[in-house]
Length: 392
Image (cartoon, rainbow, N blue to C red; front, side, top):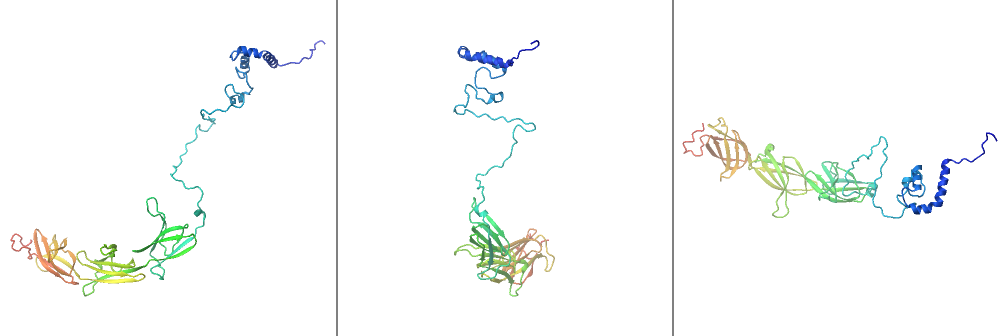
């Protein structure tokens, strides 16, 4: 037929060429493989480079996207078992807007010992109340104020000290603590008690017996019963253990008529009138639940001294004073025109020094008789010394 073309099957050039290559390669492959070996210039190798496939050696077919996943070398399929020689870091993709390296995170240092992460049984258990009360003596009324409560753990810390668990200044504190053993200290002024408490975790109310009382001190001077509160104070000492034990100072500089709370027991009281030698001591016992009042008697007097040219005259300034006993023991020293001091009753020698001149006179102190003592410039310590003059 004019203009018609007989029907033929059109095979793409690529497919035809591949078919011819495969036929040729199948028929002649052993011989060529034997002749060429692994030569990079082989026919199959050159053809592979043209089509962009894997060059050189024949092997299992793989798509270009999975080519890099195949094992390198001659192995095909699952690789054989071999030890790992090294670990290479995995390169992360660089996404736009993200840093290449992870940000640095500052974490706190871990302690040498970390407690368990889970809550303890004591924390999970509901805490009950430990209620405390205090009395001065057995069967006495509750103390309404002035108490200080301190609750310590019975297990000492690393340095050996006791750890404070709770404290209160309430007269009737309620502590919500975990079950366990505690050391309780109750302070009431100068009195106090330490007890061991075993708290079972059940609601408990306990009364603490302090065995304490009060002491109020005062003093009078001479037979007239005068109370010199301005120059009077007391020191309180507790009796030591044993015949030769030293007394322990409990309170010092206690003013008169002040109630001092003390544990039951015997105490030594030292009464000071002034700062010289007017000192009185007494032993007193304090009973639990009672207020003990004690009044001491001072045998002393308040003296005001001055150096004058005539009796009743003007005092001479810048005078140094020295007081000694009749036997020469030093009692007190001071400087001034009108020194004032308290001396216990007895005989004394008063020495006044002014402008390198020394004057003296004996004097007797009577308990309760406060007076002015005048030393005249005519009372020379050495009247035979003509160089002393009259003190002008």
